[in-house]
Length: 356
Image 1: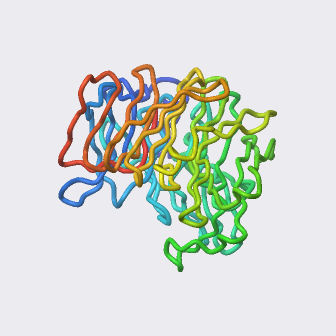
Image 2: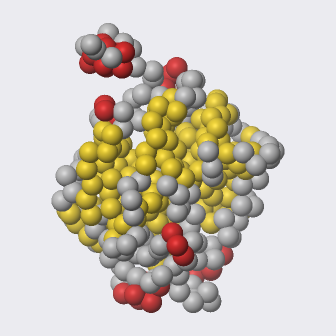
Image 3: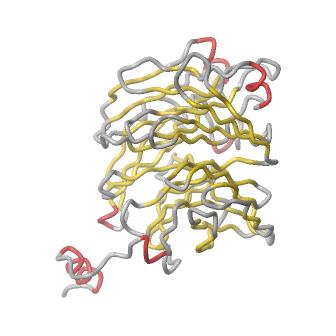
């Protein structure tokens, strides 16, 4: 006898059951996790004007999300070293599936879909081996895990899908273990890298900065429409040492460190919380919640033109057709189509804004 799920799946395969689209969820531009003033956690959809279109409960603190490219489905990830990742219907708020990290693994808070939306790729820690793993989940089979492969380094954090369909991963280089909480176990020997992978797991290119920067953990990424990658770093060395925290890279070319001068990097206090690049690959924005600022730089030329905006506890940042938007832990959504900040005193925005 055919089960109800099997019957519906057959209808969907035949194109007889319409999929829920992002338009049905209010056509959000971005996803963001937040904590409410009551201590609960939610995932929100934001318009290009910074308006909250929906909020869906989360079981614990979220870090980032991944948006399905066609269906109104979002993957909400726990903050490291969390083990939960849940698939949410952003129209009904229903939990469609729960991803369980395999034994000996935990998620790193980020994931990315293939261009067609069929597969979800997640960054994970094989903490007994001390190696990074990319997990593969099939959205056409209730997000069943269908494979995995080496991330090309240690401590993979953010992962993005390139316009080519390949993947780029920020291997932060930091070894961790759940038994040690959030302790960093290999700072003297860490070796971060930017790794390009095919969806089959073939290492296409690995990028390392000069060894003097080997304690600069590559953490967050964004990609322009022509494949230029912007990367933000977090310094794990001596607190008084000022190092560059942003670089760009395009496959087959050399990495280009964003040269904005020591004074600006000093103000960022060794820490980029999130990074964004505009679709044309001409402007990069990096946030520093420690420094309470957003650094914006126009790329190209010997001395990038820069600007600094100051916002207490700022972290989330994204570019889109609506311009640049940032969020703060104090409930503000700044930029986009809105001429004045949207203030949500009952929401404390978490780390990232994710484009849909």
